[in-house]
Amino acid sequence: MARKKEFDPEERMEKARDLFWEKGYNATSMEDLVQTMGLNRGSIYDTYGDKHSLYLQCLGNYAAEKLKEHKEAASGTSPMERVENMIRSAVEATVNTGKCCMAVNSTFELAAVDQSVHSIIKNNWKDIVDFFEQLLTDAKAQGEISVHKDPKLLAEFIAANFTGLWQTFILSKDKKQVEKLAEFLINMVKN
Image (cartoon, rainbow, N blue to C red; front, top):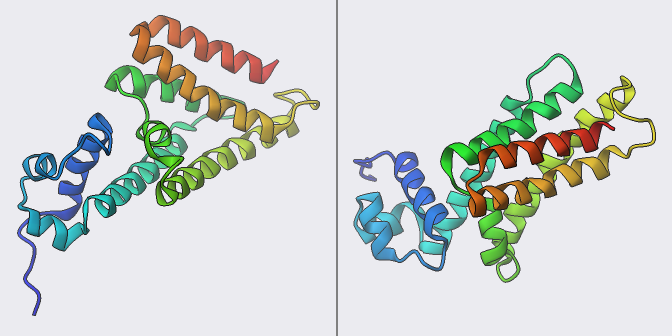
């Protein structure tokens, strides 16, 4: 009979996720994970597999959480208001944490060379773009954006601009500038 775990696997995975998010995959050693998670190597391997398997679980967890946060931020009485709130929420999250998106970090560090990472990020990107596209299609139907605008292209444009907003904040630490850029993005979508 299998022994009951004496720790919460989800909680420990979140600790690993935060470490990978901070340091990246390549700069995180197994010893770093042992120290951060408060587990011995055997417990890590038995519960999560090797470092790569743990990383994939952490990235998948992060992607699911971010999609959920985007959807929760999409509050409002109209589709365009929901889009605006999602954009502002993404900026606020970056300003509050001071960190770039883990998926973006992983894209540049691993997605070109690791098919599993590429797949997780691509699927997350598609989910976010699809959600924006539906809101923008509804906004177009309600006359909130021009009938000449392409909702799918706009959705991809917004998602791509998130990376630029995060980069701007990381480099400048200028909250007001990032907020201005977000408002400019909103105006580009609306007009």
